[in-house]
Image 1 (cartoon, rainbow, N blue to C red):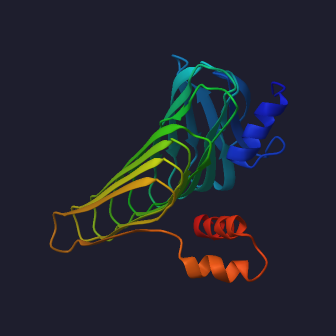
Image 2 (image 1 turned 90 degrees about the vertical axis):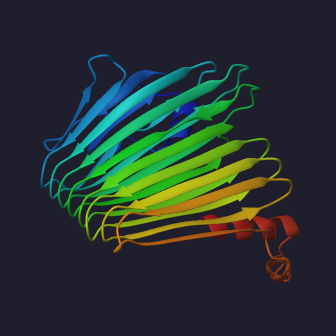
Length: 308
C-alpha cells in the first residue's frame, strides 16, 4: 500500500467513507497510478493488459464480502479514462464501493472518466455505492463523467446509490441497463449543484424479461446559477414494472430540466413516471426559525433532510 498524503486520505474518506485500509478486497488509485490492492479467496482483481483499468471477478456463491475501488486526483491537469469490468458470479451477495474525489488547487482542469461494466449473474445480489466529490481553491475545473453499464441475468438484484453533493464543476452521468426475467434494479440518485456547475444524469433501462422491475429515483437541489438535466427512459419489452421519478428543489437562479420518458413494447408492461420541481416552502423555513434557527440554517436543514 502506497502511503497517501493528507489530501488523498481526505478524498478517500469523502467518496468511500474509509478512514483506514478496509477489510476484504480493494483497489486504490491515486493520480493515475495504483496505490494499493488486496484480493481474497473469492474476489480477484487484475489490471487490464493495456493498463487502462481493472477486472474484478467475484466467484459464484460469494456472500457478505465487499470491494472498495476509490479513485483520487490531487494534482491539477490530470485527465484519465479508466475501464473497470465486474463479473459477479451467480448466487453471490456483495457490496461494491466506488467513487472519485478530485482536489484541484491549480489552473488546469482535472478530469476522471470511469467506465464501469457489470455482469450480474443469475440470482446474484449487488449493492453498488458511487460517490463523487470535488474540492480545491484553483481555477481549474473538477470534471467527472461516469458511465455505468449493467447486464442483469434472471433473478438478479442490483441496488445503486449514486451521490454527488459538492464541488464537481461539470459532469455527465450515464447509466445503461438491461434486465432479464425477474431481475430487479433500484437506483437512488442524490445530487446538489451550486455556483456555475453543470450536471446531467442520463438513464436508459431496457427490460427484456417478464417479472423484472426497474425503479429509478433522483433527488436534487440546484443553487446559485447551476444547471441540471435529468433524462431517464424505461423501455418495457416484456411484462414488467418500471418507474422513474425526479424530485427537485430549485433555488436562486438555478435551472432544472426533467425529461422522464417511457416506452412500452409489450401489452403487459406497467410503466410510470413522475417529475416535480419546486422551491422550499416558506412555512417550512418559518417553522424551523421559530425553533431558533436562522433562515440560512433552516434552509440547510431542509436540504440535508431532502437529500438524506
